[in-house]
Amino acid sequence: MKKLITTLTGNRRNMVGKAIVGALVAAGALAFATAQAQDTSDRLLGLVEPVQATKPLTLGITVVHLMDNFYTGIAYGIIDEAKRSGVEVAQVSVAGAYGNVKEQFAQLQAFKSLGVDYAVLSPAAYSGFDPVINDLAKSGIKTISAGIPVNSAKVTFGVLQDDFQIGRSLGKALCDDGAKGKKVIVVPGSAGLEWSRLRYEGFKEVATKCGADLGDPAFKGDMTLADGLSQTQDLLMRTPDAQYVFTPVSYLGMGAAQAVRQSGRKVKVLTSTMVKEEETMIKDGRMLAVASEPGIIMGRLIVQYAIREHEGLPMPPLDKPNDSVPYPHFNVPTVLITKDNVETHPYNFYEYPPKDWKVSGN
Image (cartoon, rainbow, N blue to C red; front, side):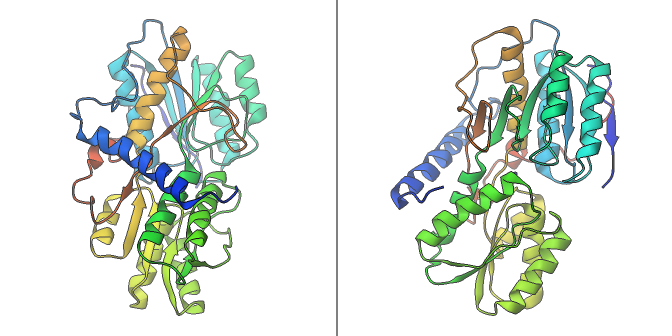
């Protein structure tokens, strides 16, 4: 495998019936529950049959940051699966933060000099990537969407998660907790991120159906623990009878949980992306539910789909393009981590890269 170069620059409708929502949530959970019951030597969980590359194949990767298990897991999954499958990884680049699109544009352009076949993109923003993706295509480089969507029909395919369904799943956990008539604080995070908007919309659809009282969201700030803490503190003061907080991602969620602890109130947080610190928060009741975001599995699937696409092999079924994801894509099933499974979920297989693993030269 070529030496990895890490570059650091600057600092995730209509109302449907409750039965349909329940069926969709159950289907996603069942898919992962079945996979969990399998021998973990099946690193692809039976989702695809592993193949070896028979033609030279090189990937370049750019992700938003490496501050949580999601993006680190994607990078680890790609690199480890590439080693196993005869694929080269030329470079791993890091934009540094959401909104750092100029840095990411430059990183994508740099892939042209490295001779990559595919650019794997976890975008720092939803829109604006069409010109650079089109320019890569003119150089013979195809783009793969990783983890979160990008608004470009020029993407070859994506391996993602259904963000609307993640929101629905969290909404169902709220409703199952008896949230009818109870107030829910919403801390949705930065504006302009399609994945967080979709999670909120999915959550709202289910939560309002069961009679929960959601506050009006203000998309603002950064997706950080500090923002989750400060915004939740402010909203807790304004909403003294709130009993829940919804956030779309872990750092906002952990900040919200910290604000709840400091307030001394019994308010439950719902969020997405598992990190180690959240396990204790789930056990002690500060977090009601966290949606798993299995970045390692996504990374492995990206490599396997890239081999098939590159060699003209049959592709396992992909979802058709839609308004939010305008290219063929595979959605990894959604599963929630709650008190029921927080001690048994196989985190090291799904979300947590090895503790001593770093993006570095081989």
